View 1: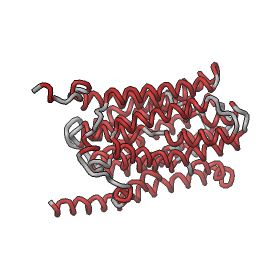
View 2 (view 1 turned 90 degrees about the vertical axis):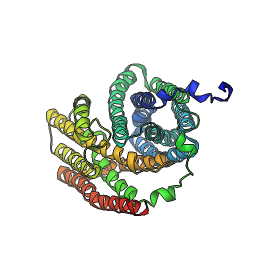
View 3 (view 1 turned 180 degrees about the vertical axis):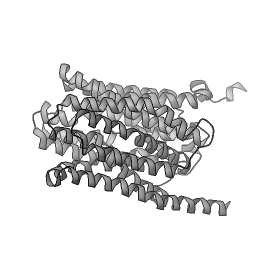
View 4 (view 1 turned 120 degrees about the horizontal axis):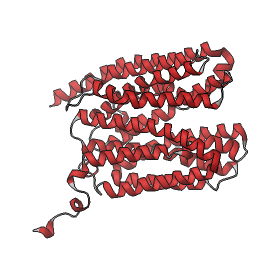
Length: 412
């Protein structure tokens, strides 16, 4: 009888395919974000490291953003079609190759090609990790907690990346950063290959789902609108804040202080707010749509307050004020992914929402024009309008979710 036992349990024990694997993947996600120097320092390298200037850096960022949107769609499809293990391993290897290519690229055309590849691998792990969370954890509240911790790990990783990367770039140059980034991606690929099962249940027990089917879900369409408008405000931390502080002639160290304030707030507020919003049981304490609306409003308030600051203290307070909004947003998005995505489609659902975040990273690039044309009041008005649209879109989102729930009840 023992000759008929499958080999997989001896390689990936049943206990490890649930909670422990989820935490390993979340920790690995934190590491890959903390070591994401190629993504975070691309513009600096193009402008200063290779001497192509700020215009070329802007072009590289634009190409990077396009690649980010395309990459999320590909990552989601790969995850749902081939399973988390294959998708995550392949995508992390491709990400490593893009980072290594950045160490040797010098000409602007080569840098633009590499920027596109880097964009396509940015957040490439998110759909696969989200799918693994949904497969491994049976309860909606447990899935929501894990999804929210995944977003938290990304925020902490980005903060670590900025601080460590700035030090390494100053003392050892950019190429070391990109080489380290590639090695971290390879390590993540190895970990995924070791801890994930070869044939995830979601990939084998359900029919492949297309993006046409996924986008036919009105709830997903409306939450994508909310995600774009909310993340425009959230991205203000890394796009709007530096512009405002530069206009006040504050040094780069002042921006670092504001980022430290944001990071401290993330570390301090995430655990208590997670307990408040999700709880420790098997069911979620609050409906996620009001939480999403609250998070969008707080994000809009925080970045609007930042538009009228002129001191390091003021900017630091505004950066910290964004954090409760980020947490509410991540909890709500995690609750949606954990409850709305059908079997075999988690990767695509996560990819659509992550793609919305990528799309939201592009409009803030026009904030510089708004700052010159209408000053801080115009910047504040645009950001507040974006947040208001996000809150308003939560109403049709809730209505579409109720309609979908009613249809499901009728069919059952």
